[in-house]
Image (tube, rainbow, N blue to C red):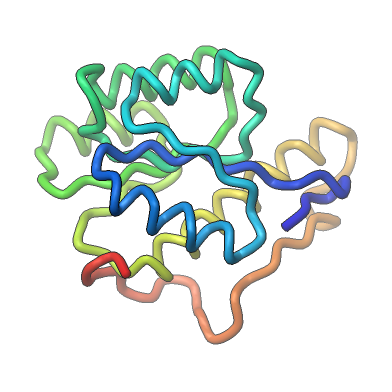
Length: 162
């Protein structure tokens, strides 16, 4: 998948569970995204420091030793405006509130349908592209983001990743 300027859209996935991480990456690649993967919050931050220009970060809030809210804060500091989508299998009031206050794009509670999570990523890419175009002097109305056929905004999320 390419953005408004013809460049490939890059997604960074941080997930501690290797099987889930591989499934997410495979599904996002099937949608045309370029995907990089990290097994921890530390590795995620390392990839962004290495010049990774990502449209969206998709991360498990409990990925690695570094606290998820701390990773989000660092991403906000180093990559302001980059949408972060958080997943969590065992949400606590503190993690949900802390993440939302940190400005995450969406907080998705497991179990989820992988298709629905990919739709959230597509919406986050749309926000990233709109902000990028606005910064370049174009209006948000000129940005077109592909929405997968048969999916409607606001459909319930739940189930096991497939």
